[in-house]
Length: 309
Image: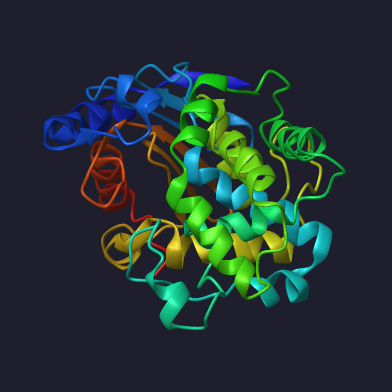
C-alpha cells in the first residue's frame, strides 16, 4: 500500500476539528463512551492503490452501522435481491435508526430499509451458516477480503456491552417475528449482530473498503471482482438515500456522495470510480453522525466538487 500523509488533507482535518466540542461521544453503549471526542482522522484510498491520510489513521474503532452495508452486500450475493427485498424494503425513513414506529404503521412488520436497525437485523438473520460462530466468521472473512487485511477482528468488550443493552433491538425482532418477516432465533441474531457492529478496523482499512464500492465491486489491490457490479450499485444507492440516518437528505444536498456512518464516529464514503474515504471522529451530532466527519466531508466536497448530483 502506497500511503502518505497529505498536507492539504491535514489542513481540512484541522479545520473540521474545530466543531468537535459541539458533539458528544455515544454513551448509550458503555464501551463507546471511552473514546476521545477530540479525535479526527481521515484516509482517501484511490483506485490505483495509492492513498493519502491525515490524523492518527492507525487508531482502531468499531464499524457499528457501517457494517450494515457490508452484511447487506454479502446477503444479496448469497440470496439475490428478489428474496432479500421480500423481507426488507427499499425506502428511506425520516425516523431515528432505532425507531420502531414504522414497523407498526407502514407495512406491518416489514422494515423500510436495510440501513435502519430493524432492516439490518433482518439482513443479519439471513447470513449463511450452521451456527452463530459460523455466521460471524463468514461475515468477518468477507470484511477481511474487502479490506485485504486478515488482522481485522471483533472487539469483544464492545460486542458484550452492546449485547447487554440491545433491548430495543430485541423488541423489534420479536415484533417482526409476529409477521414472519424475521425468522431467526432472536438471541442468536442479536449475538451475531452485536459482533457484526463490533468489527474493528482503522481509517485506512475503511477507506480501502469504500474504494471497493467506488470501483463497482473490484478490489484496488488485488484486481478481483469481490462484489458483483449490480449489488455494489444497490449498496451505494442505499448509502445515498439512507446511509446517514434521518439526516440523509440534508447530507445529499450539502455533500452529495454515497456514505454510511456509525455511532462509533466512523464514516465510510466514496467518489464513484475514483476513491474511498474512511473517517473516524467519535464526537456525534444529534442525529448520531460524526460532527467533525460531516464537516470534513463538507469541506472536501465543496473544494473538490465531489457531489454526484
